[in-house]
Image (cartoon, rainbow, N blue to C red; front, side, top):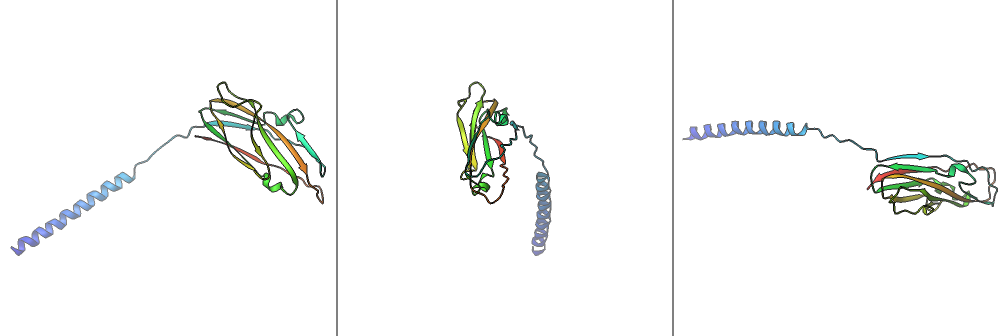
Length: 174
């Protein structure tokens, strides 16, 4: 009887070994599967650069598309899906010492039919205290264009101080 028990135990261990090999092979086969996905472009963004020229210490200047043409349609975005969030980020916080005012109003100049946004409205304002804007909601498919209206007041400086504001515009689908 003891011999039969040892043989059954040995046989059980051999079967367990085959079971482990089978399960390992199955898990290995499962882990080698691939997943593919296409990323679809939701927006095409076009930006324009502008040169505002010089400003004297203590002077306040306001610039619009009528005084600086490149501020007109400064941002153009064509979207292919509804409900896209447009984000504006800038480095204006770097110039809080050079300017007492540096406001960039982003004004809707053109929108597609059916959009709830209003042409002529300021959709956001960037400033040294608020250099980034969370999002502007673009609600329907089509092309949106935005003008920049900029107001600057220069502080006193010890020497000529060149400044260059960078605005990064990005789009994200909801």
